Image (tube, rainbow, N blue to C red; front, side, top):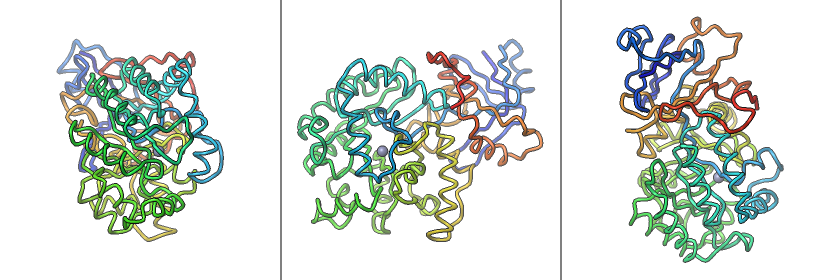
Length: 431
Ligand SMILES: [Zn+2]
């Protein structure tokens, strides 16, 4: 038994949180035994080893609902919009992942960077090559991160080295799913990139395999106005981008739809009817000049919502950064587009933890500090000029989300074990 002591924040599905200024997590055999007041727990477990993080804030491991492994070295590069940026920066980068050594090195760095920023679960697009996806799973397993990964599928309108026939894409995906799906903490996600790069045939086959094997599907939807216009041209018989996915059978309660920036009311209704999940990627939407998702409006209308870094459209692998961007973009939406209530830091933190777990159907295992869940934990320092005991619950949450000077976690625990970075700069790195 060990007690991890500090300022504990425990988020819940109804967007409430419970905070203990002098709190502790009792950990046994990699699971949360109890969460509460330090004094009570130290009396209850007098022989426990105590790891004292003093005034650091302890939150559940963050859950990134949308990111691209092969792209992280392109963060912050380029200034184009989606399609031209993909062509100039991303497709050339993803083409390099046929090199096994390169794919392994990049995967190691990618997962290490995620973990050091407190992300202990992530939903990931690998490069479009089977081997690169296989390596991504291998490295994720070695690092003990909870990973939902899929080989990016494209069968048209993309460079030759990145596309394969619909049949080949599906055959490769089935092979990878057989090898990795439910191998410990790994899940396979069917990953048609977006409607521009995928034929109707590929999407129909995706829907069939997903239904048969109960797999999650991830794709992009309604990110950018030029993208939407192209989809309209490519699929003239469908009334909207969302209808393309819906009529081809892709939309279910296990479908993650990144962006959802420019949806009509009718499209929002389709997503709600199918119980699919809209993944908010606010930094990426700013970087690629795509627009602003009406996140708070979606929440009010009971659309399933989550947060993703969308690296490298997004320019940070920190989900705390993304949680901050979500709040800031909500303000911009209200000022510039349509007056709306503002997404709060508390709501944003819940989206980045327990709500994501709920949408991935793993909330019995991770997402908060309920007894029996895996002890996936991230510890962050507050800015040293703040005195935590003078701050309210919401002020502490806000301070953590906005603490852009320190996006690197002070410590990260996976299944109760301290994650040790193989990066020689370790936790001292301040990026
Ligand atoms: Zn993306």
